[in-house]
Image (cartoon, rainbow, N blue to C red; front, top):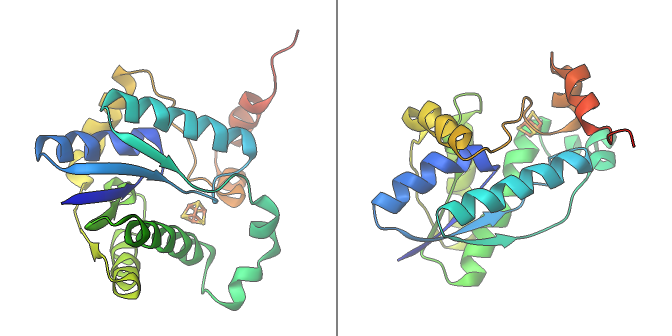
Length: 189
Ligand code: SF4
């Protein structure tokens, strides 16, 4: 009974991986997050997820490359979706459901369901529609009660904990913008 668990980042994966491990779930972790911009941040979040997956000794499958800033800025997706977040959830749930079907997994889920800052119910609705589309079960789990615990676990193993959601707009809207952008700059030699 294997699950393919979409992971948005290392810190948000900690509690779901701990919980699913104690439940004895057989699972692989799936990375597909074209919403993370700029490239430096995409690399940094992926590297942190590698650490989280190693910590829990689970296999990590990577799909896609970063970063899609130009597409996000174009607004092209608004012809099909009502908002950028709607598109952002849709493309990621579509990818994990399709990969679960193609890989012969029994079910899929996502670490996006741990965050109190995301549109939890909408993510679950979209994931359910992708389950119907690909004929693979969406395993809904409300991970939110473990959000703070997961952040503590991330701190304990030294994971980088990001200060913005992911896309270029969420970076530009962040009150930590200056500090974050400075962190992208290479150190002086
Ligand atoms: S704010 Fe977050 S969920 Fe919305 S489009 Fe940006 S990265 Fe995706």
